[in-house]
Image 1: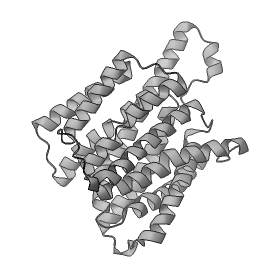
Image 2 (image 1 turned 60 degrees about the vertical axis):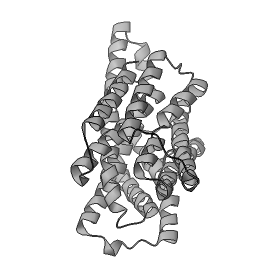
Image 3 (image 1 turned 90 degrees about the vertical axis):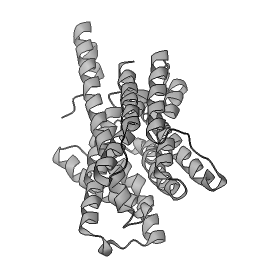
Image 4 (image 1 turned 120 degrees about the horizontal axis):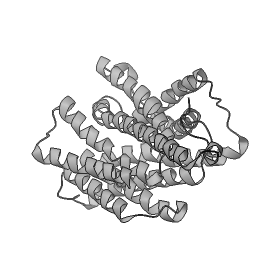
Length: 311
């Protein structure tokens, strides 16, 4: 069931009814955003373990292809057609490249040159790019409150990931360029998706974007990395299944649905919860440090996200 209120129905409502409908739509959008953040956040420790057993492009690309197939079955079960109008295909391919291919490939390769914490800090500069791009492309004015919220969330995130800044060196320059490029392209895809919406149901949109986006990544992994799936441990298979079902099926479907209900910059800022959840999950599952300073940074980041959602 699609809980969005059709635009034509809004025009037939009284101002009070319209305000209630819009609040309901935003509330659903926030819940979907939280589900996305939890799914992607827990994937940090999952992927960290998987990369000890499988190479990065194979993990990302092949799990996405399988996840897209499962999403297609889910879409058909909910009677959502998978047919895409001919005029929509150019936009669909472009958004698939920006939202999926670039993010999966560039972030995976950035980890070859950068520690995970530094790559994560750069990856989640994405809200900065999205907010900056939303002004000229979408006409979303950047209010002072939203700037403060974004600064709070970014500051908390930087403190959470190590505080003292990112130590750049010539050896790390390729990773820095890859991570920042991935963040910028994902932000561009987020804003383009709001400016020129596909007009597809969320599940249908997720199926095609993940499949089109992950197909070249998965093929590159098979050709260049030659993964050995038969050597996977039982835990590895379990985590690979999590990556398929939760990261792609659940989280991506929720992400595309949230984008249809929230301003692009608010949705982008909300994704700052992803590394927060990832650090908490890594501390619990992998024994990584989580002290007073980390907890304070978590609170600061969450406060920024909450403030952004109210701006």
